[in-house]
Image (cartoon, rainbow, N blue to C red; front, side, top):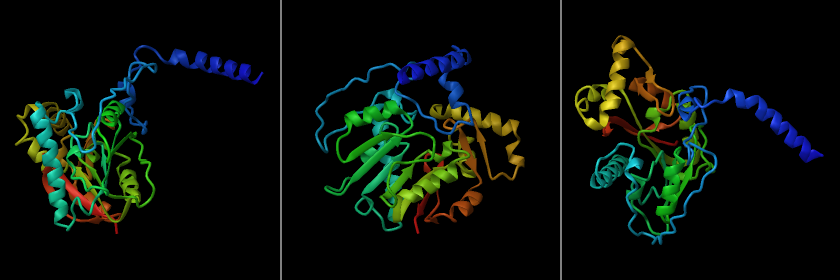
Length: 299
């Protein structure tokens, strides 16, 4: 009787909901909805019924990690060589900046790459035998499944959503770095910062890159003719002109909806706000291409 009742209720719900869902409903409508905060890219966006193939490749700890398919590169490169080199460069920049605080891969061994895509940077993080624990997460499930099947220990990967939650205990990690992640977070940026603060240990670091006033200057000068930046420069330029941004004393401005948003901060405003939560270690413009890097330490 109970099973019959459940089945009856389910059919009634489907009968009510189905007319609301037509073929025009796509993942774009969800991604472009600013009221929805828990977004992700499922492994298959076309159907809920699918098979994830197991590659079954023999992985050797510390062995060579293959290069992911080009569609997983997030527009960072045009060749495999450039893909490898740009990831290595960005990790080097993070470690160079943190070295000014007398930190290194030897002191920062439990690490999370938040928004890691297919591990472009994480694959280059120096490993300390017996100590390293290198985590990566992303809202794109397809990337995470690829990483899980192609990286071996000490790497770990999981899919998260745009909702500010990470499945770690308090005071767990030495470093959480976010390259070009907070550039795509609007209303929940502070909640994400506090979630990161929760999971890093006392004296641990959050390394975050942002768009700021210098970014605007760079994309209209240095990067305006770069083919990899064409759509980005065009979208920002159109909004900048339409909204007459230059006449505003803005705290920040944003175009599009998370996670496709492009957020630009008044750096002084942001530093003043975030310094209430964490200690600002330094500020480095153009550290992540056109983005400014701000490492913060947990007091």
